[in-house]
Image 1 (tube, each protein chain N blue to C red):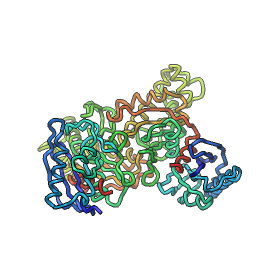
Image 2: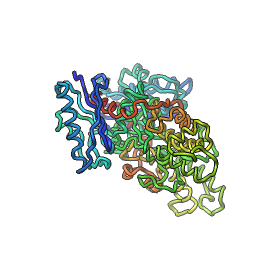
Image 3: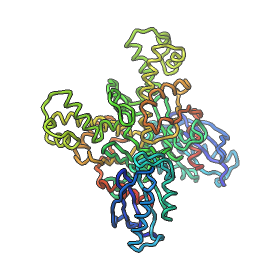
Image 4: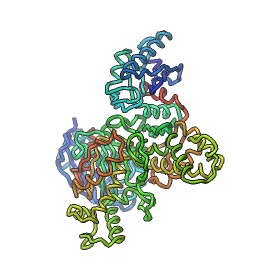
Length: 311
Length: 311
């Protein structure tokens, strides 16, 4: 019986490392730099070194370790093959085979957003549920879908890539992906700032937003203070995201939406604006789906990665 | 080793019965009436009787039968429990347990659209794929989603219920479900007729559609004949469905869409109008998803039901 495992969350600048008990208790966590130069060739060797050093430090044998779970930003298929991860410099290769060879330990890998969703299901805002959609409202909009307790990976690892669902026909600006009117353009932190600046330029209504920094935090702070202009911006955010989540529910029929990322730090008010547009636009079978805030923050990735090798 | 199985597709007026070899060859198919009176209490006993009579007629023992697969119109969860099937008069009970008791054979059950999707994957337009979205454009719009070869059932059996995804904000008429702007209002046979009648009333452009019956078939016949008004109606159909399927792809990342139902009988032209709006609105990872026509027609249900007990 294995006593330990490792959960690894590879980001564009740092790799988050978690050392877990088999019961899912995080015993230690630390970070190492992500060396993306030369096609990111050092990233997995650095991870392997960190894992093996930790085992040596703790006097742990290989038989005591269930394995290493890995989340990384990019399309990663059900076999653990990554298909081009731009932020890491990676092309197409098997994360699982590479890291297994380097460590002689079992390895599983998945897309970071899907892995984070698994983490929130296991130890976060989605505990007790096995059909879950996790939505991360950060710089972009990420998504992870869990069906019967398993990640929905999709044909090429792009399952749950909900940030580029088309939600607006008349958007003049292009999204980073090249399309126009993607969910991410309205519901991410960047998107909310964009909506706010657009609104501030279009009307001359007074607003506290004219007196300082304009970003997702200041917009929702202003909403809480009753600022009418900020409330209009929040309505636009809620309409785009609420209707998009209603459509997602129509596809996967989840039990719960877990909303995380920087924007979600504003709290329940974010859920209120989403639900205002979700409920009237969703199929009745999905009307009672639960909305909850994510609770693991930046640790969702290492928890989900650990769960990958413990299940 | 089982030699045979039964695939049963329960509809509102008839039950389609299929007797299959374990290799998936349909040996015989027939229909019995669906007796929906008294809360549909006779439906499963009638199915049981039909199965047992066929076994007696053929001199087949129970050990030779892998089981009975059942598709029925309504939310049916992963355990084979139906949660109210209005068209059949059914409340909430276990189809699996009930039919097992009546026949002493293994039983599996699923929502008819999900089961039909499994049929199209196994023996129809989706052969060779294991991540598939089947879309049925009939009186309504039905959907069935297959992930890694298995039906996506959802929390309460409403997985793949894509007909009520919200696609239009300014729809004055209510959908049958009570909401406004559901996909079904634009992409079903009924929806296309509605769009056509609305367009014919709104403008006075000449059209062959003014000279006879107006329905999905006559609209697409007119499109093929180059009728400009019919082509405008087809654009509206394609815009709603193409963008909705782009969103669905953003959720599940399928390999293929299989388009069936009465509307699909118009052929490739239907796919052309869908793809025209799908491609510019979909995330790049899903741009090369295959579009195919369903090939099993009304038999998709019995094939999928048989596959349920053979897998």
